[in-house]
Length: 148
Image (cartoon, rainbow, N blue to C red; front, side):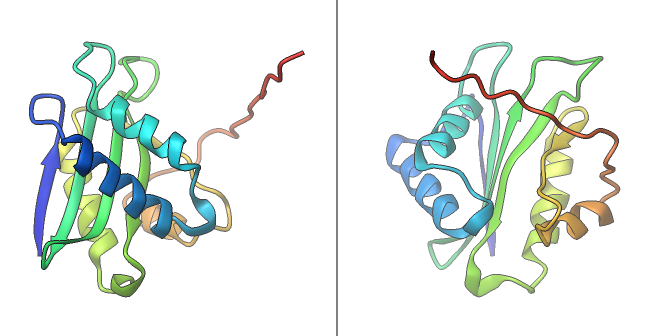
């Protein structure tokens, strides 16, 4: 297993971004987002803007992605965690092998500053996050504005 990191200084190509997006769309299962939302997070992670950016971490085996992480910087140091783990997924065929745990270790080591993430209560990945001492301090509430 090899690991590859992309960041604004060493960005993924358009083809690589599309491949990562398709992997995440397929392997996030019911906890995923639209292809466009995933691509937006990938593009944000690769942004060279000072208040944006982040990184993408891939696990690769035999030239195939087996796991992927997309981390975005929030630009809100000091009052909101500096990073938000937007996506983490492990290939269906590699679940239960400890790859998610290894991706989390490497993600935490790579991130500069604190990390926030959102997880649905019934997502089994929640238990992995709790093992890494993520806590549920707040109840997230959202207002989705619609065009009138």
